[in-house]
Image 1: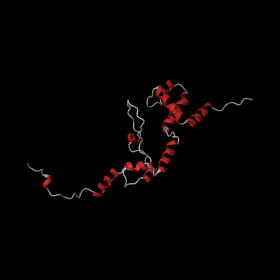
Image 2: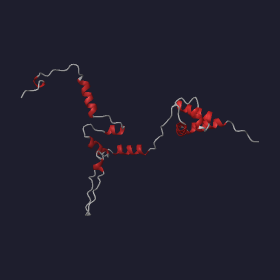
Image 3: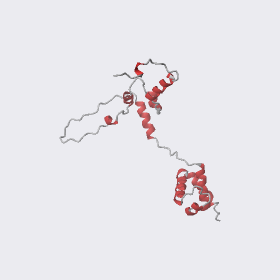
Image 4: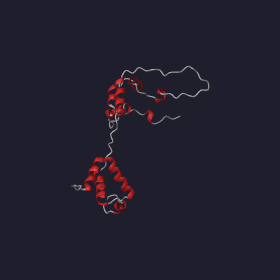
Amino acid sequence: MPKAKQSNRRKKFDFNTDRKKLKKKFFKKNNPRIENAQIRNAWDDKKSTARNLQEMGLAFDPNRALPIKKPRLVIEDTQAEAPVHVVTKPYVLKHLEDEASRPEKDSKTLSSDLIEYAQYMIREHGDDYKAMARDEKNYYQDTPKQIRRKINEYRRCHPQHYDAFVSSLAGPQPMVQ
């Protein structure tokens, strides 16, 4: 049986490949960057992923951490408890719990063009969405329902802006004597 042509050939060094880059690429793929600063600082490269997470009090395999018990016909009094692991780095777990308990900021915002568009439509037409749909500034030919949705989005994302804008439209209230 004949041999493969390549196997008998002498190995040549490839001057076109950068070995340093290849090594960096290999390490980057094997050790991905950990986004969380607390976990990154507590991480030990000499230990496995499972061991690192176990020391921090985190679960590597959720199926092992919280096993689902199979229903049995015969009820036994013996209960198999999962082995309790020693947490040597509890500060990581505390920090993650604190971070998770903080309320999430509503960071959704609208573009300045969309805000100007909504303000123009409200200023010109009030609550008449059909007239807004026929307006010449309706460049994208939004339907009345789409325009209503955009104005409601503006109202929800920027409530103080919207209230100030609507109150400025009302004009000054006449003083009663």
